Length: 253
Length: 308
Image 1 (cartoon, one colour):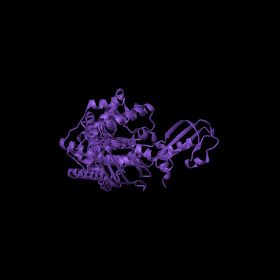
Image 2 (cartoon, chains in turn orange, blue):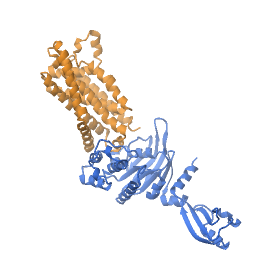
Image 3 (cartoon, helix red, strand yellow):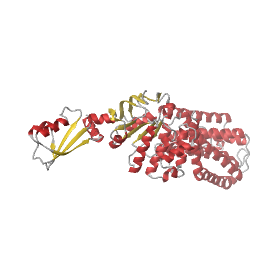
Image 4 (cartoon, chains in turn yellow, blue):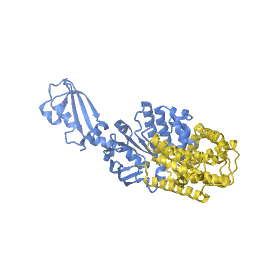
């Protein structure tokens, strides 16, 4: 194991986050605060409690997931797309580094950033609404698992993308709608029958539901299924990454 | 001792169906400077990229110091430093950070003194805290070299090292290459500037349309294929070349005071000595003699012309 290489890549990724602290930390915090002001206070004051939880508090897990998903994807996809774009990827490919090490370093870097971001949003949220976390361990577990899974997903997009436009395409057209429709701002039990069933095909529902359960002990779908679906998606991403590396897809061709 | 790099039956066909390399066989000797010469698009960069692990080959095997580049890629790649043709650096990193990153990537423990020496040797030390984006083109090129040398490679690939480089940097680079060779580093450079190969290389390989056309000692190549020219300054101008000299195919300058004899070492045309004897016998006197070797460039152009 070339741990020095893993560390070198990881450190560069962290340095980039610090260099672009405005973009990577402050802007998500500001947008989250705006959600709280608009949904939590302005609209939320007119919405009754959901499952006995005040609306402001109810949306906290969903908001964190929203940022976690989009940031994990954009961090990881950009981290591997950028060297491809400027050509400096040659160095990575010519280095004595295994695929596993490359993935650990890039995905680890991206996941670290989004986990830190998630915790910062959590801290920000606690300024607006009273929070309590029923299952801290599972809260962290969902946070880490989701960050890693979607960083892997972002890594795949970064390797697949041939242009900056493609890089934005999947997050914009798939992830953002899925997150908004995945119960960030409502309980899926509030949906009329057929739409509730349709929603169950949205994987993000399971992430948000499980995450919300770790806060308030209440969920739209059972926690076991949530966890299972997250792990399944993680497995799918790992399989795709393994295939990419075995074939050299868009890296060594 | 076995070759440091051994390329056997390597081919590369891109997904588009383009055959970039057709069956390449090439051995690079330990400690030599090898120039891979060829026109644009001949396959030089593809070949280097395969050896360095950047591009997958379609078939064939490559070993670096006995290590197979696929099975034993860690050992093989650890030995290699690559300076690519394009200036591709993360623009927002500082010189110091990016060179240390390269060292780490190749699994070498941090060594500030060594990295400092590399930067000083390349006149980059003053710029160590500058971001790559602020460097001039020449400085960026130096930085690319520093990154390649940061992990103490035993084989250095220089892909078109002096394309668009000013005279000072070119000379610095050649001096550096010689220093590295003294330390036992094997150097492979690709170029389409013949003068570069001529000035630097021990051996020259010519690649064209994905095939190695020829590999030889530079001196040997020049001896074998090189034309020589003998120029004779005549004491008194000639109106025409005497009939008896037709077998020499001499050229007479327009004003008639210089004879030029072009010959090569392989041809069965009569030698210089017999020409001079015949001239004396014919009473043609000359003031001065000068000879000229043809450059690798001419050899190269001739070689490619012979290709179907």
